[in-house]
Length: 334
Image 1: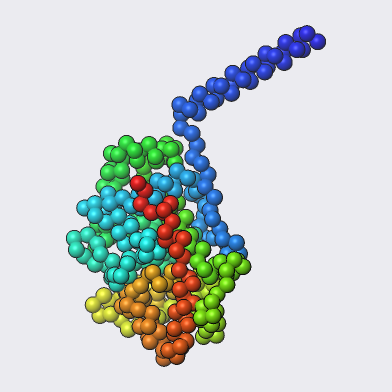
Image 2 (image 1 turned 180 degrees about the vertical axis):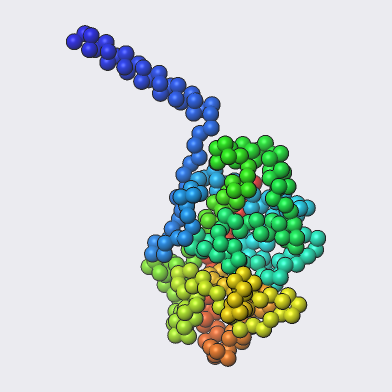
């Protein structure tokens, strides 16, 4: 018995010493990032993004957030991602028809609002980018947007000790590469989930529509607006001809530019109606400055009386997600 007791004591001491060594190694090494849970709203469809290939972490999200607001991703330092995707405008460009880029140039399209991207497999108005991780490469290298090269961006980031430390913490020894940079940006953009508007609270049984909002919701369904703007995303994510004639100055043929098929001429992604009161001007080129302009455009195919327009507008106000656009955890880090 005495021998057995001694063996147990030695084993216990050895275990304590091993734990101590492990703790010391963790303190002096590079502790693993903290896992971050994706805020999947109850009742929403399955997401499309492959989280297994880019697991969300708190540190990865914060790194992506820092990159999103960093002008060094552009050639002259003046055009971070956030210059066209402003948080207070539901990550669209406030009150601009076309985005403003490097050297006083303009793009040919209205900046898309960035939210609920985990449910999308094709990015941009024409679906030209098939993976969120690849999406940042287009605006960074476009001459009329951020006008930078990827090697130059990686060189600037690698020269910043804080960035090198953060990338190592998030991605281990992979360093700062094109893949790790875009994956970090994805981690931030994936967390831009807009699902806390009054409409959402009503659906969750936590609020009720007022009389005008309820009437507008009925008009929304009776007029079959939901055939394209399907709930809960308020878009079916398809590409449709919005009935607008070709702008001869911009010469934007839409989805046909990607597929080469004539039947895709002038087709553009059906936009989400969430936060629509924050994301004007409207349509792919921002040619309509108000919702009344949009109603008038569709009047031939889906006529609405002036009262119906007012009620529908009231319902659309219930889609504004103030908690989302005012969330300090999504704005520029200080």
